[in-house]
Image (cartoon, rainbow, N blue to C red; front, side, top):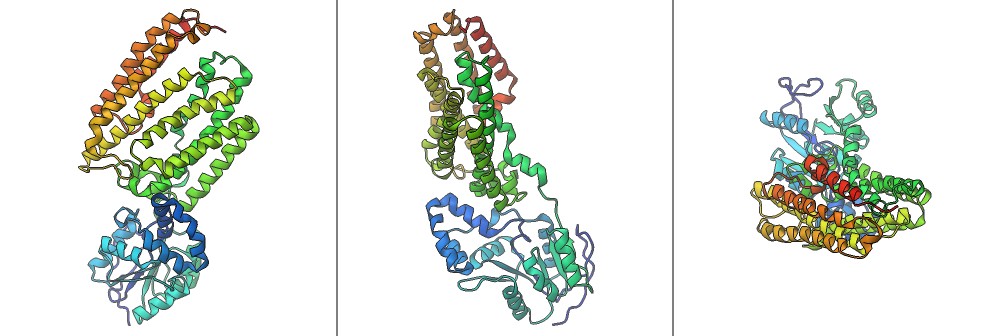
Amino acid sequence: MSCSTGAHLESPIPHASAIAVDCPLYVDLDGTLIPGDSLWESLMALAHKSPMTLLLTPAWALKGKAYFKEQMALRVIPAAAQLPYRAQMLEFLRQQRATGRRIVLATAAHRRIAQSVADHLGLFDDILATDAGHNLRGAGKLAAIQKHSAGAFDYAGDSRVDLPIFQACRQAYVVGAGRALQDQVAALTPARPPVVMNEAKGGAAALYRALRPKHWIKNVLLFVPLLFAHDLGDFQKLRAVAWAFAAMNLCASSVYVLNDLLDLESDRSHPRKRHRPFASGALSIPAGLVLCMALMLSAMALAWSCVGWKFAAALAGYLVATMAYSFVFKRKLLLDVIVLAGLYTARILAGAVAANVAVSSWLAAFSMFVFLSLAFVKRYSELTVVKKAEQTQTKGRSYMVDDQEIILSVGTASGYMAVLVFCLYISSDAVRSLYRHPQMLWCICPLLIYWITRVWFFARRTHLEDDPVLFAINDRVSWLCGLAALGVMLAAGPIR
């Protein structure tokens, strides 16, 4: 087949290339059409849908990559409509399509995935993909393309594995690749330099956002036992809790990364969460898994070496609980909010272990009810976003828009139960050993009632984002309430 040259392409490509209308264009999927890998997408989807099935994957891999992909595709297919496509590449393909050029999706991904993408985009005339017993990669893909094209062809790819295809094609389009691969392709095709199509990558900014450092302030809860035991002046205990705080921050970031990897599909359907680094494709899934493991190991090493084995054990227990939440409980009606509230209370208990102080049953009960109320606020706010999008159910959750009223009732009741626990604490004998004027603590009750009710008013008026804890941290009135409560505690005359 001959290739006639058409007009020059006007697009945001670094340097122009002549369009060969009757020369077919073969386009890779993984790393080219999308910045990530559809196989990794499938693995995360399988981990989210059926974590225990992951135990079968080593046996599949032993039977070859084609068999592995076949078994994955039989169980999960990434949602094509929500994959993070390269905008520049899509625009380029639309321009090529407008000329009447024949475009073929040639990918090592399984045929079911390729077909799903092709059906969604509507840009491809045909598909070459992996099927049972045949993994379409490298030399195998080149042979399939040459047989399919029966002549000259152009190719868009991103990998060093594609070098034989780049060398054999008429015009190479190198997408999202580093300088080393660009130079290799240029050396193989001196007669026609490759067209380089690169978009801005996530880099350090995306990595920073993936860690979610603004959420670390939640771990200040580790200092609560020290505060209520009136031991903030004990330097040794304060230093131990400070190290525990650092270890908990690393642990929390590892869990946030894991959650983002498991929630790719649901995050991409959310108006704000779709911009997260992994959902948007700014960071790759393998990088996320490595980051998650490194953070977990660093957290445990820091906890063991700088705080002690007891806190390390408490941190390990917290980590197991958060992973159980991520894999199982997050999608269970009511159990998710109970476990979420328990994880906040677990921070307080872990702080007590680090400081070697006792946590009263009053504090544990109070924190459980407060955080249960805030967990319900989080679900209520998520449903508000769903309702605005004219949907009926939160993606990846078990709550429906019609559940908002009962969530409102149970959530506010939980908040007021926390106030009741605090009232009973003030009336108990335990408070007299800690304060000279415990009756002053009654002044905190109206502050609690006001703050809890205000949070729910804001949620009801749709002025609250998904996370009520972050709302409180950034809310001036919440800070004033907290400072007022602290002032009351000091006025009550803490003993020690």
